[in-house]
Image (tube, rainbow, N blue to C red):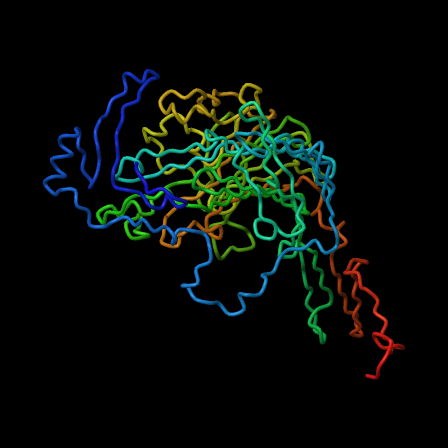
Length: 544
């Protein structure tokens, strides 16, 4: 595929393709298969020349050389927004930093959380020994692969499958812009990696910051018939620690967020911005994406980002419980007039062996990694729930020749396996070149082993079906191109883990209408100001 060069080259494709057979490692056997242009295939140079001389290659649309429209700079031609000249709001740690760091050992502590961080040139950030209040939740949490598969009626779009670890995704985690990529006052860490017999340093490639979640962690108001309308009101501040990195692999900017919440929940979010890999526009190919510029089509594609979560819930002997919501017909003696009526209940089972599986339709199933031999004070098995967030998808095409066997990890929402040291990763960096015979075949992880009371690994996918649009120009927007999952305590504790937080407000109204307001000693420091009449003039002379 050919494109006009320049900073926005992915947005200015040309309608000319060379098809080359480069099977094997002996270049003397490589051969030209033909050319594609104007939606036609020409096996030989002679046939292409004949079509050109006959005027058959004229195109309805001419690609533009001007790429200014595709740059991420200020565009005054869009107009002026009132008050936009003012600095936008930002998260500030106004009470001081509430997390502790050991930079040398890449160790972090925050509000009961503790974990170690590592870095891989292929996978990026990796987390180990994640604990909450001294108990391990995860041995490992790491991104495994960022897959993108395209669709189209053109050679490039039709056969494009990217595995971004092949391009050393971790090394593309670049410097972050304070105040824009991360809040002002964030902690920034460098990453280092070997390259060509030297050590490279990407400065400020990871940021760590505490943020206001912009919603309370919990709250409740008890109504009453007094002047205030309530007898008590409690609200607990919502805050969390975020570890962030952005990897720009070619045209796409993947933002990886790991959010550690105050209640023991851990959220994983991935967002995608950057340039589309676009195609030359032909009206007859609208089913593969819309026209987004003069001669540019936004190519339809999937983004699938695969993660590994090695749980250790009260030890390594864990099971995966499935609680399915089912509708049943039943009668109850206190409603005799109804006879049988429909009611919902949980059908609780356990996965018996390794398998790939999908989220239940309508989210009518709960998946919990738990310890079958450990219970809380109420006799319930202690565990962590897998909570689907936004846009948890898998590949749309399950039998494409371009991802036939080398992308098995991207073909289901979830998978559970026994932990094995010889199965450390979902993919191999060489797999992108081996769609029919991958170096590592993820499907072979599933060989009938039991996953009951065993050391379990959950493999999960985040991503988005990218229905392209003109608003992807100049680049895709983080506001809608994102996906998430939450790991949340499920009977892991005896109660919600918000009662020990001082950042809260408790308001009570007694029977006489008197209000008691409890801030638990937490608030903004106030600088005392003493106002006095001046005793001397500036400069020492003259009258006012």
